[in-house]
Length: 135
Image (cartoon, rainbow, N blue to C red):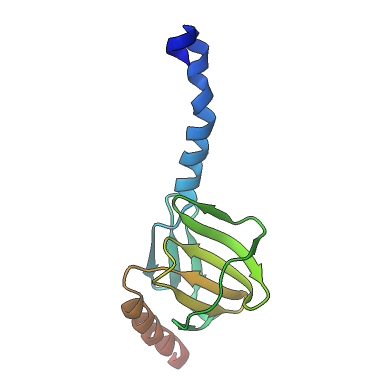
């Protein structure tokens, strides 16, 4: 449009779109780590820690996720935010794919993660939770 019109002020039109993409990718889940205090959902900004004392267990049993999203985002960089559907109820998504899901049963409801090695992540988390229970 700038080339056709010769008006350089049209260069600012894509800035709002690029700014929104920048914010969304900064809030997208980038990884999951088992830290001393809990499971960390890593993000560029506003990472979230779920303490082990709030996690009752984890599994990989397939179930329906998604549904109505209160403030959730489904974007290029994954799905995140709270959701609700009839079968699963209230749950929180922090996923980048829909095939390698781990379901954390927490006091606040179900939290769905998508680590790169889900079986290893679930086994390590189970050992960590058992260690926390014995303490």
